[in-house]
Amino acid sequence: MISFDLITFLDILGVIAFSISGVLTSMRKQMDVFGILIIAFITAIGGGTLRDLLLDQPVVWLRDLTYAYTIIISVFIAIVFQNKLNYLRKSLFLFDTIGLGLYTVVGVEKALAADIPWLICIAFGTMSACFGGVLRDILSNEIPIIFRQEIYATACILGGLVYFALSQFSININWVFVISLSVVILLRILAVVFKISLPSVYR
Image 1 (cartoon, rainbow, N blue to C red):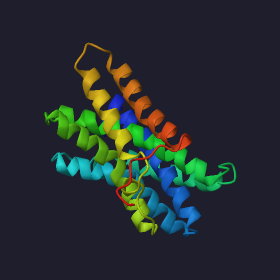
Image 2: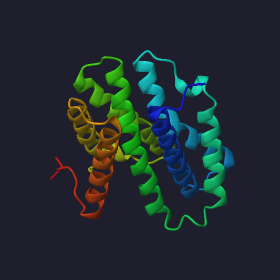
Image 3: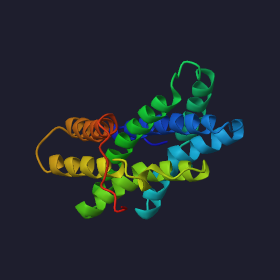
């Protein structure tokens, strides 16, 4: 079992957020319990799995059952309290945004620890945050958010840039995580609230 340091704690929080995001999407598509569980697993571990494979590191959820237990418990809680999660669209957005921020900072930090060039570290953070959602949307027969005009991956990129910039100074790592996480979440929320999107190339 890996120790519950800050990175692991954030990783687990990201798994919870993305698991619930996957549950909400699959329930909206009226999937059965098995389908809900599969979508939750893929959403929660898809980005982290790709990240670990590309970094040539052990895929953490294969060695630590904490992740599988966390996903199963999150799915159970989300199903039991589905009536409490009013306005599914807003709930999906909330949990997806939280997971986006958490996985961005975890992905950037793990890539930095592997001595990867800073630009690729930001790419790893973005990929780690977005890939599970891409798989979720594809399997749910939707166009992935990352391929639309919405500010999604852009928020991860800017949050990753902030993380890298702050990590170059003598700032407490906890504050680096909090600030970078907040940047991703706030950018995503502001983009949706004020309908800010990337420019379209279509006329």
